[in-house]
Image (cartoon, rainbow, N blue to C red; front, side, top):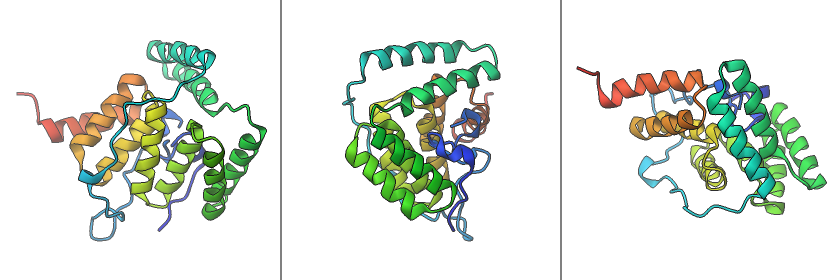
Length: 223
């Protein structure tokens, strides 16, 4: 069964991290990926065969890189959730920025199609975006979201990889990775991904709760 995509789902994996307002990566982080009636994830992905992140990172224009560095510093220092949300919105705006009118139009139409549950159309539009601009972070993020709502975890993971190659600080993608790992039963790798997301953005309340739960499960209680 396909997942229903919310308005936040079109914001960098917001289907996976409601607390981030983004994967994201990503629906809501309030529930793990849907499982089959027998308790197994609908995707048969073997966690040992998951894509590995490359150490190579595409060059980001100087002004955008400087702006992101400043904003990530401000995000960590944000005194409250409201301030953090404001900074998050600015980060998302930079990730979404494009000088191509064609890319902007395709992305707008893809988001409309996703909201309308027209996933085949959205996929074709996002494929066109990434063919036109393969380093466009928002394109990879949106397609990862689309694959996730269709329960295609393998392809979603592959697109998350592309997001993180281009921006290792993408807290939505990191949280989305954690959600998928948790859904696949790999709690240790899920915990690692969630911790990395929090290291970048400590204001992800739902992710923080998952870290608490998984820490106890994976590492046990403190004596």
